[in-house]
Length: 361
Image (cartoon, rainbow, N blue to C red; front, side, top):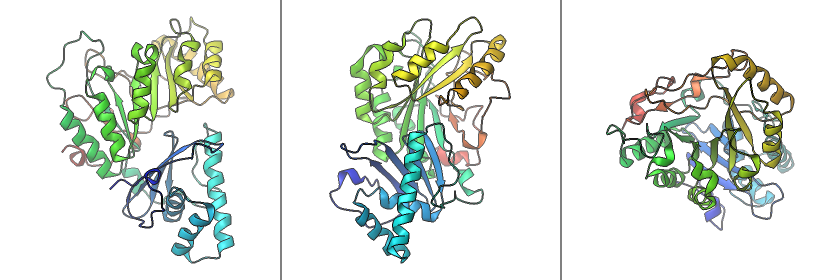
């Protein structure tokens, strides 16, 4: 059952495993979104602004759940005190520290938390590693509108089965990519279904429609899109052309190729200044790897948020494009990668500890 405190005028008192979502009130000076997956063992996975993932132990999970019920501080403390029977002043201090930690992460997007200042360590042991942070669903082999539809591509119903299986397995985020996923006529339906389950949704696209059609972006957001990875060509796209996207309530990562013959630093600074939340860079070809590594370090020195471990679109040969990063900047983590190809089979990068048959219904 999906539990959404935004849809309820009273606090939810039945704490149980499942998905919970929260958005700060419209008048809050600091806007953010939380998605919490409470696992059967009462550990939790908390996603902050569809970008930062925290694995919480039972105490941290309950504090996050109580905060997400949308009540006042006193109402939240009432829930916590019913659970822990501790001194109210001690619990108040712990709650404020916990919220402060969340706000610190929001205000410092390049921060990767492992232990919160409130003392809520991440879940111990290896159990949480058996649950990938994200399922990457490659919806289509097509890259252009006139490309023929491959008859092996899964139907809408089968993709929904995959998404539901990810939900049942405790995977908190779905990332749609391709080919070009906006060529799938059912993309909006799949996004809506992902939102209905309470999962965080992301989209990797290079579609000009995303840039040129503000109504399309608005539709994606209204239907539930949380995270956009937009690939652009800095030679062809001016940062100002992306401003209408950055102004939306949507975490936006700009992906682009790095070439040794192109100076991109000023272009990047303008993109970030206009509101890009993160960047994802890769070399145009193997000869540009060294330039990419140097440029990566330059961006790190500027405290620019960089995303890693994102899938690449499929080529015509139906193979996922290899990453050409040097080992110094390659942060690939196979424990959190799960890829499905358009025909529903696991992709070559899909290495995880979760039984594949659990997601192949």
